Length: 367
Image (cartoon, rainbow, N blue to C red; front, side, top):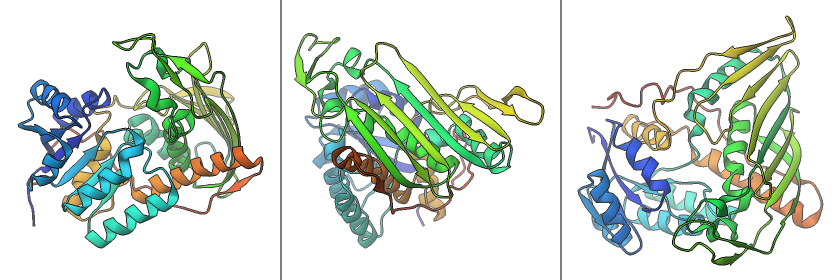
């Protein structure tokens, strides 16, 4: 049996890696020993910044036998191929969302991982944050009665306003549906129930956009996907939902509300790990605040839970089944937008275990 912290290699040294690397360095149960990028140059920069002993290209990282778990932080189009290569080299994999570009691709990746006797996990890991954790407990305890409706909304000018190289976020496999929806869909599914059916419509305000900041400021790029998506549908058990996601709004606005027969809860954006959770009780006609502890860790909690699961022989809470279910919902929404008809969602996932990952993030729990 392997003991001690799980040895991690990170693939992808872009802007998202900063938060991951900073947090993973503070978790005693993981040890980031290598980082890789396409050219190896950005990997060296991040290795120097975060004190990582090894850096290089992805192919070099696969040759380092000490690495047990590969964390993939590259653009979505490369997720499946990089994951398969990592699995073939005998390493477990944790992916940034989305899991894959299609269900056949996801299913093949799961089959390959199973054949290799290895594990694959996937973001988002905001489900481990105190806001969603405490809300999940409140709903499970019956505090709002039976959930009857979920309302989710995100409006924003779009990542071209701040990202130095945003074109990939407007390409196939991205846009608000595949970049932002995983947070909202994962939150709703783990708070209440899996999705059952969905109807979607989409639009885009412009066929091209301009990079606003960074060395490529002023450059134009094509928009390949809808930049505003609206959906309605039903969860297993009858709870209805509606979701609006937009990169076309001049304002930034987030809301998430679950309505039950006996009350209501409002949450911060599920892209965040903490924030104010408010509860309205029908019995006393009053609003109150549900107490939530501060988030000890943010991005990387899913990697931590997976590392601990590997040592203990458990299934990660940010599991393949959950990630594939969310992918299934997004693809069903895309199908509905193309056909104009309701689309069914047939996948499901096991009940999420109640783990205080955020509260114990900076404690050593594996020996």
